[in-house]
Image (cartoon, rainbow, N blue to C red; front, side, top):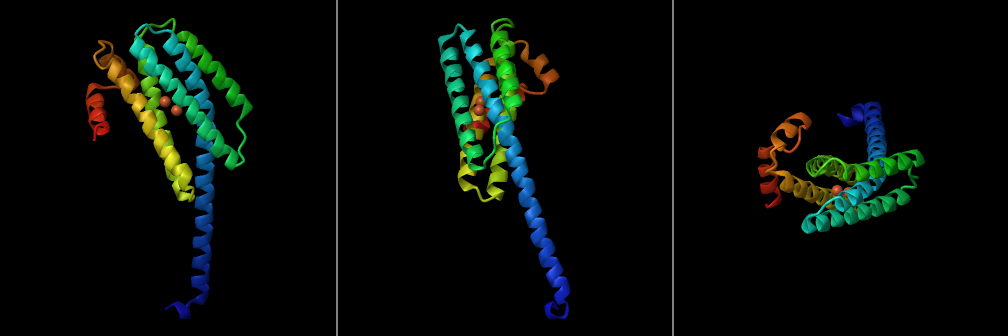
Length: 199
Ligand SMILES: [Fe+2]
Ligand SMILES: [Fe+2]
């Protein structure tokens, strides 16, 4: 009974409180680490897409990827506000690395044809969708409701990006082989994800 075992109750309460504090600390460090990576990742993505749409000929594809570039800049702005609130500074080295990677991919898009930039953009977007979903879970657990809802919106936008890229490559003859090698973009997955999105 509770009053027969006061010391244990105290211990169990304090260990629960300690566990709660440790969980919060771990959620916070997971959220910060995703935001730091995503902030610079959005920079790389935006520059890569700038090179990508400039390398294309189809006006509809150019317009959509231009829009995707704009959405990546918006995401970076949203993350910047979250990081400011949490007093987290972007890592200069990571920023420089991502700037270089984005520019190199942007230039590479002019050299490696139509299929591969579309394929790897879609594969990358698939990872972004999950990252923002995870970040939203951590934000929710920390009671940061505004962050949580914004991160879920961003995750949905990344899913739309992924589905656009899946859509444009879905009938390409290289897709079956490349999707087996790089584990993204199988036909069944394309169909399944399209029907999820239309729900
Ligand atoms: Fe993004
Ligand atoms: Fe995206």
